[in-house]
Length: 160
Image (cartoon, rainbow, N blue to C red):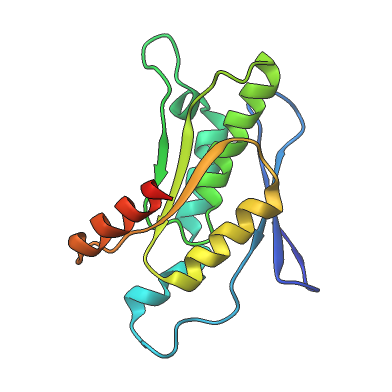
């Protein structure tokens, strides 16, 4: 991991299982936590958790987790509590690599990024744009404690 101190952008090099060239994933880490609410459960999305780095490495070394194989088909990927989105972006990178290799646009797999905090969701969208991939994706707010609000939000997003 390297840090471009000019704009809080981190560059992650995730090993590739198919080449010697690692996957490069750019992440902007939001600078400020949600101080107004002051709750630790709203601030977790501002941290790059070691588990996200480890899981990203694991799925890069074992791409069939995302891409499927003869025993298990591929499908949509949902990152719950995405934070900065490293795991979802790693999955999107693998899907993009597969799409580029197959030279077809018939792959309908989607990466869905979820989190609770609206500032974290904005940062997730920024990170998706930083990586400029051509994989179907969606960023959704997800509140585990207010499912009615989530259902209304999902219906509104589907209507748009």
